[in-house]
Image (cartoon, rainbow, N blue to C red):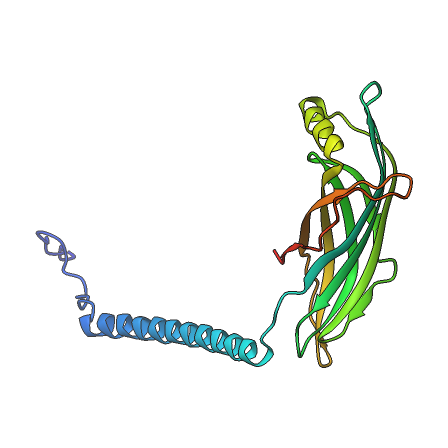
Length: 225
């Protein structure tokens, strides 16, 4: 007769699992902190190197924004008829672009000139057909002509028009949108899109006779961004 297996009370003790090694945990955590610290120091060092390189380039090149002046403006027609809200105009402008930089040439790929009166645009002209380059310490001359007629609704601003008509001097704004590139040696920078704004006080000349007012050379505001 086979012997019975002895009855076991309670659970059978299995193989013992050693507790996790706390020293290994500290080592892995220390390695992670060390890696993160090295990565952070590398990023900070790269940022400092880039900032230092930009500062050194700025000291060497000393870049300056180009300057725009309206040297002459001739307004031979500026008539508004309120029965059909029609503005008839003819405006000629002489514009100078000055590159004051000693080490950078400037490519003007696009100049879109917009003429405004009382906040309303009445004409747009493209002043660059093929584009041009202004060399270092050089000045380029442009002519812009706005002529034609445009529907406008002056509304309450018609009082301002009548007042300026009695004086013979009109407040006309010129806003230009450009696309330019900078050249330093053989390197040509990417496209930049500065904006130019000129607030003009233009006297009206009719039948070839100038009014007592004279146009004064006006410096325009140039914003790279």
